[in-house]
Image (cartoon, rainbow, N blue to C red):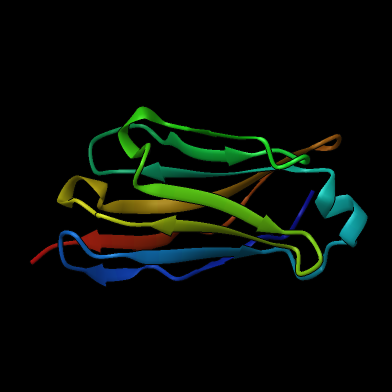
Length: 118
């Protein structure tokens, strides 16, 4: 399991952008590389839901509600996963969690708050 540290959340106006980062500083690089990484979010009153996922060969998939607006990427040498969020909407407000899935199970970060409001 990985120790995940998220950063980059904050307050942004509608239409703005944010980039979230998720680092695994204590992980062995090869172990990190073998993990499928993802971002989930939990908005008020709803269950946690998948936003975007990137596999060990950089295959990606996105929730329909972020397609064309968000982009997930990973830098394996730095052991970091990013979520670039553009054209943000008020309904994107929530806590965003980093997730890693590997042979030994799943790990979660502590979450970072994203608030989209004017």
